[in-house]
Image 1 (cartoon, helix red, strand yellow):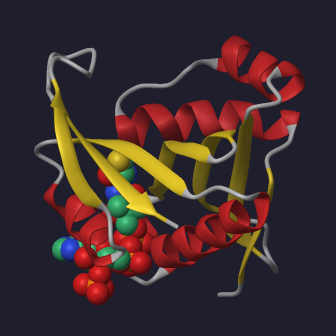
Image 2 (image 1 turned 180 degrees about the vertical axis):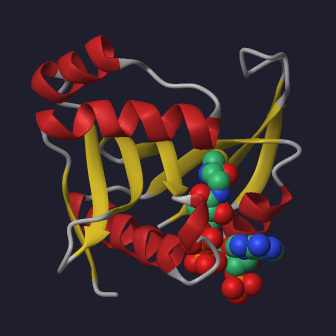
Length: 148
Ligand SMILES: CC(C)(COP(=O)(O)OP(=O)(O)OC[C@H]1O[C@@H](n2cnc3c(N)ncnc32)[C@H](O)[C@@H]1OP(=O)(O)O)[C@@H](O)C(=O)NCCC(=O)NCCS
């Protein structure tokens, strides 16, 4: 399986919303994502897919206001997790952000999400603070930060 990472297109949106909901339990929804894609110069969304079959493998979205950036969305489809694809996406976005002039990257992660937190720590993110009731179900988020 050879993955490629490309900019998200309008015709990806229904699939992204479906996967946002099944993997993260929430999504911005089709309308908001369409206007983000068309009008918001501060956001960039990417799709990872199989180079041969175009099968969808994962997604990452960032908000950028140089020198700051924040990860909005990040996942790999459950069937393909823990095979290095999330690291591919993270390596890609760190390189992309560095080239864009970003020096400070933050993200929020559910406090219960030990797998993602382990990965972020491996990538040099450190805990900054707790964001109380950050998610719609009331769970707190850990705010994490990495200097690029
Ligand atoms: C977090 C996520 C994107 C990582 O993607 P992935 O393709 O599984 O990641 P990789 O295979 O590149 O592994 C990277 C690290 O993640 C952690 N990890 C991934 N899967 C894991 C598992 N099943 N158990 C424990 N740690 C795991 C490990 O720290 C791993 O590093 P290691 O291989 O050196 O142990 C993926 O698990 C995912 O999509 N999770 C659901 C959505 C989510 O939580 N997104 C983040 C929201 S903030």
